[in-house]
Length: 312
Image 1 (cartoon, rainbow, N blue to C red):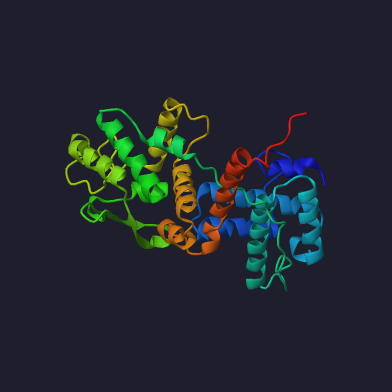
Image 2 (image 1 turned 30 degrees about the vertical axis):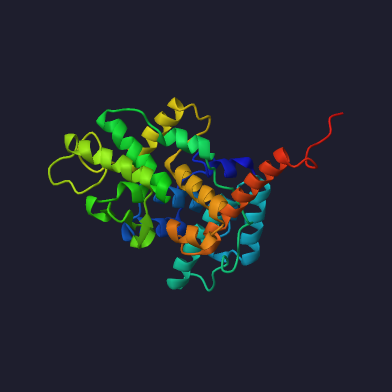
């Protein structure tokens, strides 16, 4: 298998014209029937061209599970990452399901096939000192006060950026220190809000009217006076991280990771962290136990007399 086939997955030329026959008709059905986003359709197109290239002169409907398994193994050997392989295999599986429904194939050769497992990457978290430096914004402008409230709340309650920007004024109960959050799948949960975040929000509410348009329901607004968008939060957090001297590629989700890691280090209560993060499965939360172990390992290496290596 040539490297040009691999490069095409990244959007470079190398496979040739658009898919014809069954693959072309499948792509057209996706375009007209499912109203997919443009970048999603482009990804399906790349995966279809790849299958067409690998099949050579053979019709895709004539391929067997052995052929597909051989294609995936070759792509993996050529360096395609497991996550990309999973996406490719998913697209091919969808194509063959379409063929089977139309009685143009008797079986789905992708059925039951799984891509190589991807190595799990640990989430990046700030140290407690870095997190405090990031949220301790000293800027009395309306945007500065807003940003401090944004970041304090994200760190206090472990919110996703979409949850943060989706908060309405009515969702916060300042008296009880509780916030109603709408997470993935439109599921709602109640999370506690710490005193530092409540104080920062109170300061923001005192100046919010200078930015917000009349009748705007969002807790956090941008320069336009409308609900702030995730992209703006990403831009602002990078700016403040640089000013705070934090040598990391800081993004909003890093505050969520930091919240989970720091609460787990302090309490050890995995179930409570799961509920606050809104994870459907505790398996999603368990990744933070690895961060906790890393933290403990560093403390051990620094403090335990038998952990230190002797100097030569």
